[in-house]
Length: 402
Image (tube, rainbow, N blue to C red; front, side, top):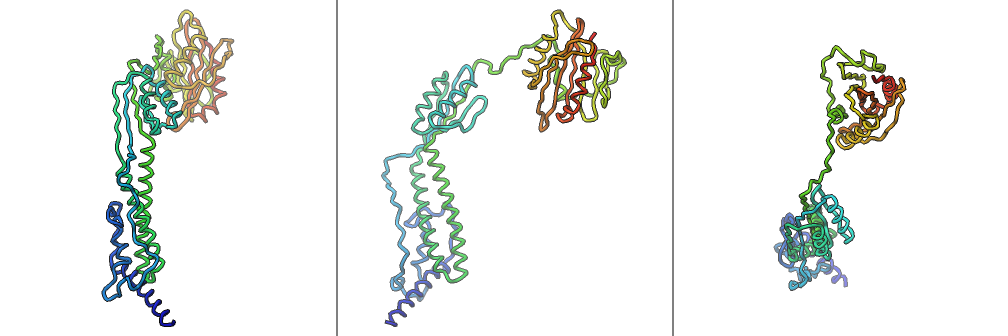
């Protein structure tokens, strides 16, 4: 009995020596994603076979050691005559429509109801991901939008690619299991390090293959449909042009402040048209225009323009508001009627606009006489502008239109 036990222990020791010598006696080949593509081991067989089938010189035949727990690799059970084909569909359709923005909204909504989603959208095109079983339905929805001028539908058969990825993944996972079993039997530090390095490589390869398979499955499940729109009708709203050039100049100082005027001899301020607010310096003045600035960068611009028959304060306030919103894209969040100190009426419009990374406050006040329209603008960094808001408004009330 003791002899049998010793014989068994000796056989086990020989087996371990053979296994570890198989790892240590042969260089472990670096695994690369494209290096395992054939044979029962799918390319991993070099190391796997040597690990338990290639003894060193002088060692007993592997059959006499009776190794256990290391089943031979089997080819993955994939039917080469598979009839179900995996196809990735991509479509590009050009359509002429009346309103591009409306068509974008309609097709996006229709695809969402089918279980699809938008991948990318521009002002005149949209790329959609559509469930494969709804692809033809999606194409029909696009054709309803307008006149189709071009339609390109392409299908790519990826059945063989998917089969290849499946085989490589199964082989990689089988080899990973064998390496784990070899690691459990390793006794030498050198062998342990080599196996661990190979495990790290094969793990990375497995994750890469799983990612590719997941991407391919998603491409098969969701077709890609790109719709490009064109229209013979201008898509931008046409802004009504007015004959009053100064109205279209309002708000321009927000983006391009102009402080390069030379000082003039005549000034609307010299005739005491209103009071200069404290903390501000007048840097330009002529017969029709006066500008001032605070140390914090808040600007004031007063100018007077010729008035016309029917030019009431209500008319000018409505016109100025429309131009500021449509042309200068300044949201008008405030509208107020003011009573000036001399009992004249005025209208005030105010808002905030972001330029770059900063927000700026803006207001314009309008007062009118029979001969002139008095236009008072102020703008500056939001914080400083809000701090000066009360004295700016008091300055507006001090205006005396003539």
